[in-house]
Length: 234
Image 1 (cartoon, helix red, strand yellow):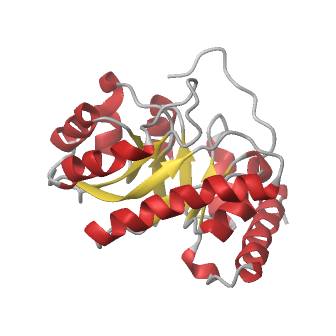
Image 2 (spheres, rainbow, N blue to C red):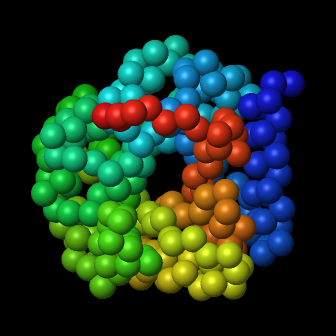
């Protein structure tokens, strides 16, 4: 067993335990392996171990990896980093998901640049749930307005919400923030039945996110090991 295979098993067990603890169906929770800065060989190892969903933060790095793993069937690529307008076409043309929509202009660009031969791009609205100046995302009270605008774009499919809460050491504090996101998702679901995704929870707050209702957790270093960042990233 490779170290990546072992790590994946450990993370999957954490997800299963968290789901069992709060009485949720394990099958409702997807593990997104965050492969940013990691080589294609690591992605291939994870794929061989059964992992199919991968997340990338840097556009050009992600596009390069998608091109190099075209032989890996059923692989699903999620863009989860901040997106600049001048890189939107690459995301629209190459990824299956974009987690970080936070303004109409960007949504319109992705809609217009999505190739007609591809199905609509799955998108999530990023919420700055902890109101941190260092993070992207919109305020909770702006979600419904942006959702209505995105829902009108034919080449995008609004699937739900994403957030990166500020670090909290106490479980109950983590849970309180995660529940705010879950409540916001439920409000959207009442208006848009197709919404089904809450991208919430990483290594340090995964259990609280799952208890609150997360359907997709994003885990990187616990699977692939510590990251070594390049001097500059696209």
